[in-house]
Image (cartoon, rainbow, N blue to C red):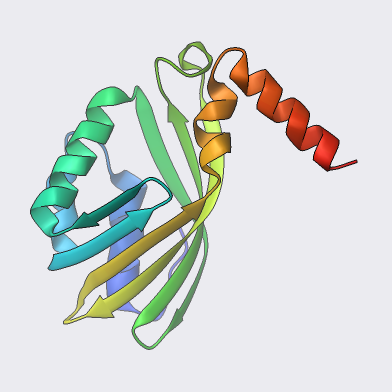
Amino acid sequence: MVTTNNTVTNTFIEVYSQLNKHNLALLDSVYHPDIVFEDPAHHIAGIDALQQYFKALYCNINSCTFVINQAVVENEHAFLQWTMTFSHPRLQQGKPRILTGCTQLTIAQQQIIYHRDFFDLGAMLYEGLPVIGGVIKHIKARLGQ
């Protein structure tokens, strides 16, 4: 597991390495009550709303694990590169899918007050759907020529 010289970031990495639908209360140990969470599809404000988001997320998936591959910390800011392996019953017949991404964190009062995830939403969702997934993969391949 990656470690840094920042306790809050290390706690975040530890929490996400073990996060599942049975231990979502661990989120309270890293996030500030006024957390702002953003990703390509969501903007969430407040720890209660974030807890509800994760609860709904984990109810709808078969599995989800994170591996933090790299972390850079400077003062109250951290950037993490990660790999997520997840399985959703409606994407590729529930087969595991792998997604890489990056997280930007801002720390205040020894907790994370801002969390923004950067990842390819198309690769996460649309490429796993029947028909449209093949079309998107074909377009991406043509763009790479």
